[in-house]
Length: 277
View 1 (cartoon, rainbow, N blue to C red):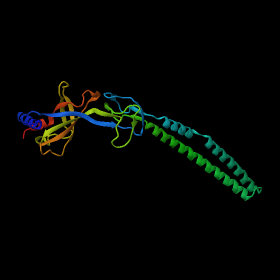
View 2 (view 1 turned 180 degrees about the vertical axis):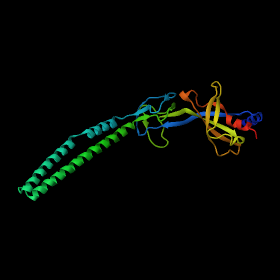
View 3 (view 1 turned 180 degrees about the horizontal axis):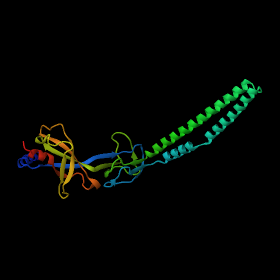
């Protein structure tokens, strides 16, 4: 008799006794994330190893970044340069004063219209040069931001809290991009845990998303832990007449390890079977 057949027999016996049946299940990580470098580069440092716990935003590894640091410093200097702006502002002031004098002289008949127009043109050119200096400074600030972003790509941070399950690259090796390239490390998210339960078709409709569940890990862990049904498969396995249920099991401080076998109970389903017809 297979495990699925045994689960079905256990369910039938529990149903006859008016009890909530226990079903075999397995505790898995909520998800496993492969951490790749966001840019090609030589690995300078890896700060974690297999078995280490990590938090969101923790620095996991560093890529060699001397070139990017130099580019960032150069971009910062250009973004802070004030000389071109001051020169352009002084030229605007000078040409504005010159135009004012020429206009006054023209009104008194001591300067020609051509002199006045020339002074006005010089003033407009100076104003255009000031605008260009302002735009160049703003462009330099954008270039600085881009350089900072490029530099930040050399620092690899954890997107989740969890436990390092594998460390695949080490300092001195090259991190590469692309499908199929080796990740630097792998991290398993363990809060919450994902519990997978296989139920007989007779239970279909009795267990729904949002229902509570009780998970009993195998010895020597033991204990009873409340959980919540996250999803119920909409496709029945015709060969075994079963369907899968996914349960989220809170696991603060990573108290429970993943990979455990367990038993699952669904009190709401048991109550439904005991309700009078």
